[in-house]
Image 1 (cartoon, rainbow, N blue to C red):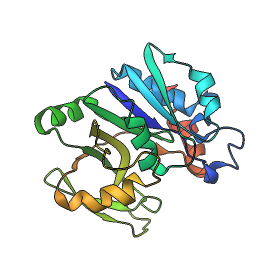
Image 2: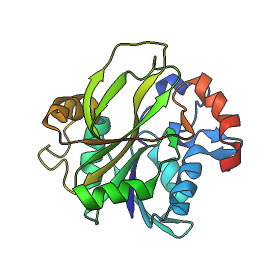
Image 3: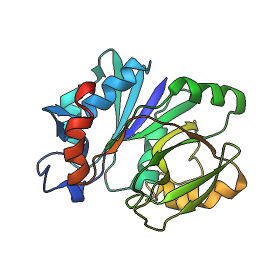
Image 4: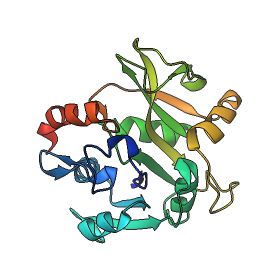
Length: 229
């Protein structure tokens, strides 16, 4: 299996806690967050990971090199900020398999890979993973109908709800209609505009979910992820 990790963001909201590293390399109990993600992917059977880098990407490349725990590591090195969509479009160019997984370099979620593989083998359609959180204020919510993504609600609320966990399975060339080097958001410029066509399957999963993008959650990850190190 093959995965793309989007790790090129500036991490501005986390700069006060992690001033000298890309966000994906923020330390969790002394271990880079990205290393924790890669260890989890290796345990789940991934053989190759493409890391999309931009801001201070050299630090990531020098740390992991071209292999980690037996997995081949490749890099998609953006020359400018391309957004989640543009960065993924570039990384997709070097994907080898007929489908690939996508993860954010600042988010940990212990997803059920076998369930996603089963859905893919039957339907051959893109898959978005959703999860329930107690406070949706940072995320906005989504709707699911009969295993399909059925809507987005960007209203900020501190109540519980179903959110996009930022984990996906896409067929190769999913973004081929977008020009290489074009800056766009995977979520706002693509997914929110095509969900009504019932092209995106959606699976709800439970488990440890943490986005370290703000200092409060970065601090919480120090405890929540201690057993993953």
